[in-house]
Length: 229
Image (cartoon, rainbow, N blue to C red; front, side, top):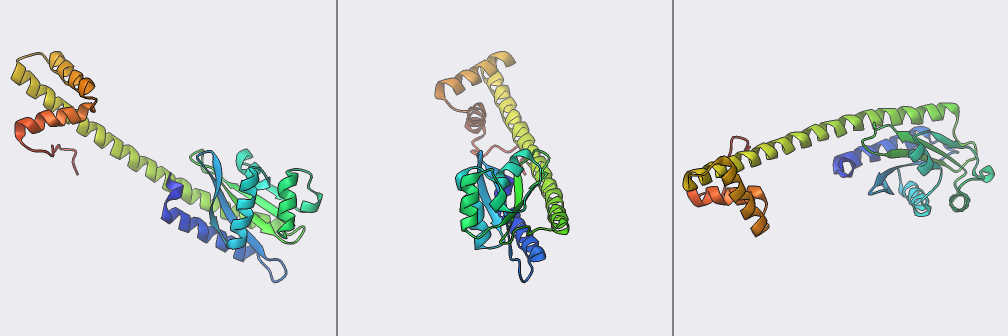
């Protein structure tokens, strides 16, 4: 998963730190974290500080809460005063015990390629103004745009590598079929049948059997094709 890379983790950490710095005031310390869904489970991948990380992990431990709800619904969610919130009661009580009074969660639109949410915590009730919400949404939009580009580039790179591997395998198999046809004076279908039977009998991938056939003829262990880089 691309969101696991160190470069992306660093980018998300910078995002969380900048968002927390932008929103914090002398009388309203704000903490920010980023949660993603990994292997169908929520996991904190970035945070502005240890407090943000602990608060994200607290919610992840309950498996539900405002941030995870925002992530799953892909809709921004503001809880202006936890003391008056009737949902997610176990998590809300635990968050209040940690000094949290209001929460803002903004999901990152990654076009279905991954799921992530920007979580912002304040120790004050009504700790986020309309301007603050706009700032967080702007941070989230910019981050999502950059991440979508990275994800797309990664997908294209993986597709290219998969295609190169497939073409390389096909070339090696075709070479082996040609060698078997020449040695046994048989048809292409018969040569392919011999190759697949050997693969099944020896429980070895078809490409590996084909490579061993070519190696036995050429004496080279590494079979090079035009698709080798």
